[in-house]
Image: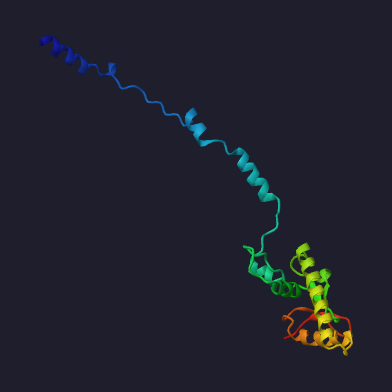
Amino acid sequence: MKCCGLLLLAALAFPGCIRAPEIVMVDRATALEEQASGSFKDVEQRLARAGMSPTPVPLTPNQLEELGIQPTPLVENTGKTQADRVDELLRRHCVGEGRDGLLVDTRRQCRAGRLSADDVALVERVNRARQQLWQWMRTVRPGVPQEAVRRSWQQVHAEGVVCGGWVEANDGTWGEKKC
């Protein structure tokens, strides 16, 4: 026991021999941490370039409407009739009601969009149907000239044209129908 006590006394007397290991702190990430964090140098450069190059700012639907441009619908309106489509074309000024009672292609004044191939086919179909109607009306009243039948039909039809629709006046000028 004396021997153990002497060793203990020696250990307490010379504390400089026993000490805790040094802990080294490194402020650099380990290889695993570097892989996990990734490199964002490319992303940062693209972001900086994008900030320097101006791009157009998208307009809201209300701003587009104020400019006279109808935004495209988010879903296809399959419930529209041919008459609804013609009214829409008249309001957009892509098609006009001519003095002779036929629809006229006025795509140069067209607002908000273009005249598609389906729209052109629709206009031709409507004009063909109107001409067939006038021929039938002549068979019902054979004594009335075709021009008189067409003119009287056109006067009655003009009252039902959609408000804001593109209509040809008697002097040949085009304008919106006032309601």
